[in-house]
Structure formats: C-alpha cells, structure tokens
Length: 358
Image (cartoon, rainbow, N blue to C red; front, side, top):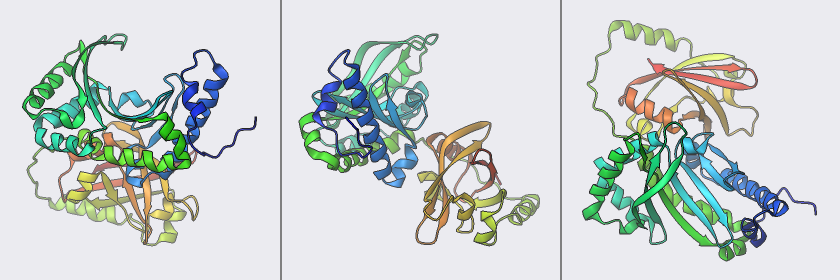
C-alpha cells in the first residue's frame, strides 16, 4: 500500500497499533502517521508557541510525539502526545531537575497565581506531582509515591503551599527527583472521527496549557540597582552604532553585522529582542521566508533553540529567545538596558548570534 505524505487525521488503526506487542509493521505505520501529525501540528501552531517549543519530532523508543525546548526533550520542559488504543493524552511534562527547581521556586513564591492558572484549565486537566528515587550515577528513577495526583483545579489551597514546598525541597536532594505533569485525555474514537480537524483541537489543548507553561518556565526577577552610564560607555555605544545596517539592500549581502537594541519591560518578560526592518534581508532565504533558526552564544553557553522572525507588515526582524536564553536575559538585564547583537553567517548555511551587555 502506498502511503500519503499528507496528514489526514489520526485513524483508529494508528491508536490500535500501539496496543499490539510485536506487530512491527503496524507500529512502524503508526509512527509514520505520528510523524505526519506532529509536523502538521507544529507548522499550524501560532508563532509564540513555536518560539517557546522550537523542537518537534517523534521518539520512536517511547512511541510519543513531542514539542520541546531541548533536542533531548527530557532535558527541559516539553509537551508530549501519547497515542494509545483508548486515548490521545496531551501532557506538559517536567522531568529535568533544573527545570523543576525553577518551576517549584516560582510556584512557591507565587502560589495564588499558580492556583488561579490551574483553575483556568478546566475539569478535564489533571496535575501529578510524583516523588521518585533518583540515581545520579545512572540517571535511573524509581517511583516512590505521589505528592498529588488529582484534577488540577482541585489542588486544595490549604495544602498546596505545603506540597509545593516539600516538592521543592525533595527535588533539591541528590537522591530524589520530583517530576510534574499537567495532562488531558481525549478518547481515541473521538479523535479518529475528527479527521484533519484534530490539528485545531490539539492546538486548542496547547493554547490552554500555554499560560501555565509560560508561568512555570519563567523565574522571579532579581532586583538590580541602576547604574549610570559613563562617558566611556556612551563612546562605545556610538562606535557600535556605526556598524549597524542603514538600508535593507545592504544587509542581504553582508556576512556580519553588529547592532545595539534597547530592552523594554515587555521584551524581557516575553523573551524577545527587536532588530529593525533593515536587518531582515540578512536572515531571509527567499521572499517567502518568515522564520530563520539561529545559533545563539550567551555568556559561556551555546543555544540552538532560538529563531529570528519576520514581523508584518513592515518586515521588522525579531529575535525570539529559547527558555534558557530568556532566563539569561532576565538575570542579566533590566528594563531600558541595552544588549549588543553580533550576527555572522557561517557554513553550512548557519547564522550565529552573540549576545552581550552593551
């Protein structure tokens, strides 16, 4: 049978295949369909979701589709889609200790805000906070008990602070990891009957999750004292400005440019850095290009999860930051600070960007 490369829906044979142990042909067919599903879903998502979860794919070993922050989904927060005989489960998953530390810290400091977000999810969403024994040497985990496993909006205000504080404490210990899951299930029969409309429905599930995902992946800003700029720094800014692009046509043929952008509170909170319409041709591959993945150096780290977007109607370029780079910007800059962007084209068809205080 010739398979189509166009996604037409998740049919019952796809759901059934994952219940057939040893049926390699059926499972391979289902995985192929899952790949078509996640590709079609990713490219239909709003840009802000693509920016927050820039990686997508299928884990053939775990038999799941995913949207992720990291190329290895389990190394940061990710959204997983479990296709099983009876249901499609959509889950926002935290299993990485560093990501969990950040999430529990935010939940502890802003517990009422977190509970309000859970209340907005609806009755069909469940929250699980799971205590697991952790072997740092092998990375293996073993279930110990659940600190909470019930509907998300039923998380009791009286005991929530206690559960969150205990989760944060245990996750900070070497012998424990405390994963967290926000999940929703839809019956396989219902999903299979949707056809292509499953993309719109799953997109709505994701949009429902996004306020909680954004909250849990953010962090509390550190208050920093404002520093007066010296004459030397003003001179340095003037020298940097001289290297910026003056005309759009100039940038298409350039191999490198430097630009200084001023960070507003919204930029820091939402995780982006504005460039200008003169910069977009530097990133554009052709007239239809709307986004361009870039490799970002920040501090002493490298990140491959950022992208430059073309904004309509004026073709302004905007650097959308991955979660790790967004966190670094939050820690490094205050509102009205300036960030230096150095962009360079490299082989093979890559663009590298370095961020630093200006």
